[in-house]
Image (cartoon, rainbow, N blue to C red; front, side):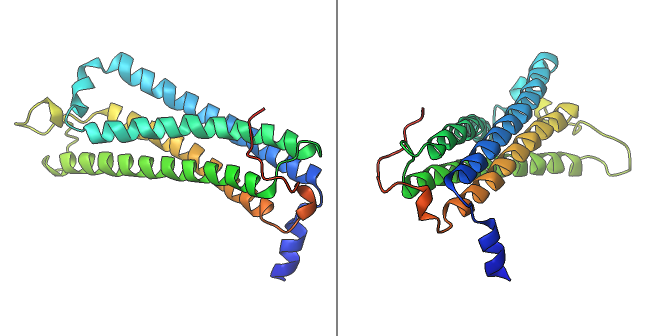
Length: 208
């Protein structure tokens, strides 16, 4: 039964595989653009209406670096999804069709980038959630909504901006997970035994 399923999922020709790369590439690209735009709007909101809290992360440079790294990974995977669409055109053209190892390297690059982005986001959300939990546990637990730890400096403030920050991270996480799933599917399709879809050349892929 498993063998039958694998056989049914195999691409029948190069045009089929090219369509898969094109479709998933554009889907991943626009998902990341949408989620990234929403996250950017949330970040702009934080910067415009919460200037008085810009010093709260001064002691957490590690979190800032991880957040910047996650945003860079999002930008890279967005570009890489677009590159999948360029690769699809090469796969559809017998004259410029790349080798199978070269295509697999491209997909693996997307997988690694998405995985690193997800790892950075998980670490940031874990640290931020632990920080919020610590602040709330330090306040009186009498059912009264307390947003500042009494007797402590301004760094103890907790407000809706913290939730906005987490929401932005979650949106980016969704985009990265979608791209990771797409890349895994593309890797599965490429690694299926369909040698007629690729040339024997070992030249590296160049974006066109």
